[in-house]
Image (cartoon, rainbow, N blue to C red; front, side):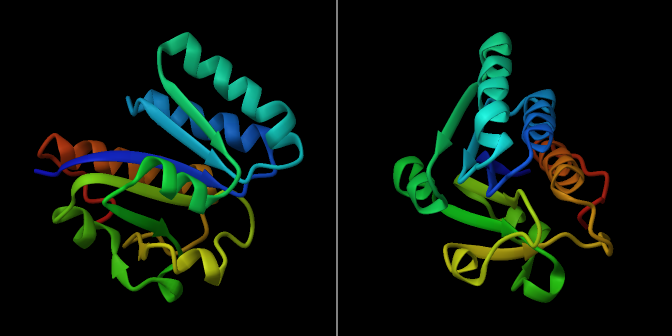
Length: 161
């Protein structure tokens, strides 16, 4: 059973709808803290206030920070995992999570093409086994967080074998 505090992070989002849908997914799966970094455009102007309102309604926590290094500096995670396509990853997400303890920040790219090479150096790039096509940030976030929830309860649906 996994014993870690998971902090979902959506990085570099432009779309207000994508940001709000990501927040609904995070809070709907009972994660209490959602972090957004480097939001711009409608994500910053409309999505951030809507997400903050949603967090306050349900008693969740929300942080909007300028960039990913700021989130790492402030939240001080024990490990940073960046969810990316397999060709950019160094390990399977499930293998990393099996040994996970402490505070784990899981970062999802909020726009195309995702996370930059420089951003990938801030943590461990990991891929989700069984996900061959680009699901987009919200789909990927939903699958990963659901599987983490199942792992934390000692169960698994084997989405991320």
